[in-house]
Image 1: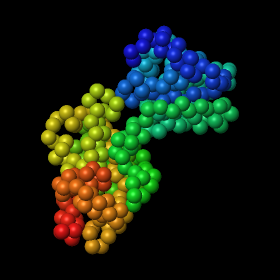
Image 2: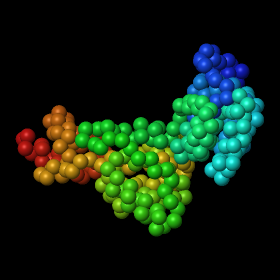
Image 3: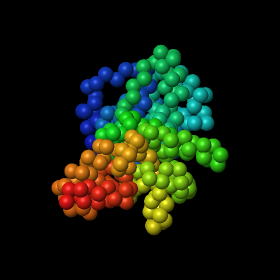
Image 4: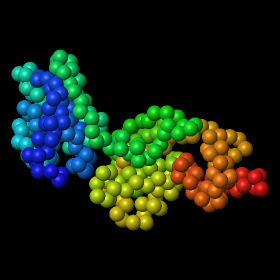
Amino acid sequence: MSLPASELLATARQAAGHQHWPTGALYVVATPIGNLADFTLRAIHALALADAVACEDTRVSAGLLRHLGLDKPLLAVHEHNEREAAERVLERLARGERVAYVSDAGTPAISDPGAWLVARARAAGHPVHALPGASAVVTALSAAGDGPLPGQTGGFVFAGFLPAKGRERGAALAALAAEPRSVVLFEAPHRIEALAQALAQACAARPVTLCRELTKQFEQVHTAAAEALPAWLAEEASRRRGEFVVVLHAQMPAAAADTGLAEPVRRQLQVLVRELPLKQAVALAVELSGLPRNQLYDEALRLKSESD
């Protein structure tokens, strides 16, 4: 962040200080997933007001607070102790304190801990306020541009990290490959090649967007048919490093019998072929639909021959 901490806090107070900030409340605060400039002013002010900060990892959150010029009591609330640690948070809420909860990065209670804490706070009658912000899931979906496009099934499924064990992992992959909606996955760098191979086998022609190091300096977003991903990853070692979010694009409806393409895609390609040179029309259709180039090229040739 370019502003000194004191100016940043003052700016946050000016932007959000006029709002009502109840005491005895839990504030679920989204934090940046890589770029500190994505911190919202409202989130910064919530942390400044908090009497204590519950967090997934005290070391990570301590560093984050130092960037903001803040020093707060930290309460470790992570996946291994969330049920017990939630009770300590409830004690503070009962005393009328404001407690903020942050995970290491992104929006708590999605893939990171926090859901149990939120449920316990609500059950105990304490207000819970969620402060929106960075989310790897939503960011990846935006980068993928996966709907709602004409002819696609709406909505998405967030699957998080797949099981590590072979049989369970295979079953989960098979179920997701059959899912007609968009699917968002997280994957570790040491498993990304195996995931790409599995997707290539399970749904070769289905478009996949691979997002690496979202919001960070070396962010990379690549969309291709699943069958092309293993080769793309193998081309450069850097493509296999970092944190990954993978979007398995929504399935198009059953293709028209004569073309192999869903009708909205066929109509779109027909217009492109009419207005543009063949190669340019196909390239644009690939970008818009995410479908394999060969499939679109064959249909483009047919459409062009009909028009000629």
